[in-house]
Length: 124
Image (cartoon, rainbow, N blue to C red; front, side, top):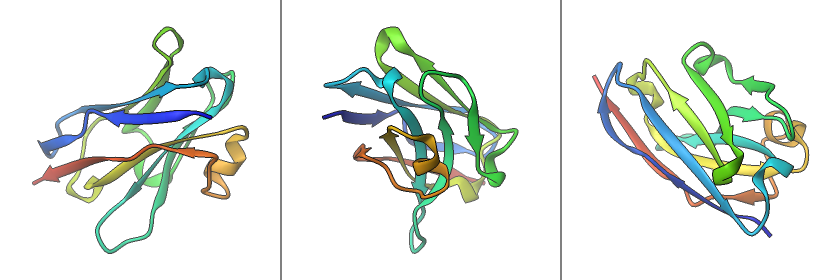
């Protein structure tokens, strides 16, 4: 079992960078592909980005390409979502998720483990 805990959300002005953290316990996070998803009010959950297991290749959803990136800190058993050039339409609850296969994250938009989510609110 992997327990995931997101942190770093908050309320920011458009254009302000923000970094979310996904800290894992129970298992080594580097053994999993890790993805980020978000759900805005009244909308379905959508895929944001995912980093593959054991590597650095990252899949991005089109709305965040060039603005967001994902990185790992294996010593801290943590994955980060760096969000730059934030826009009001990025407002959502952000979730991290872990899976044995990255395709499960970016294609199927499912995962084996989920965090509880952290709120990001971007004002104009």
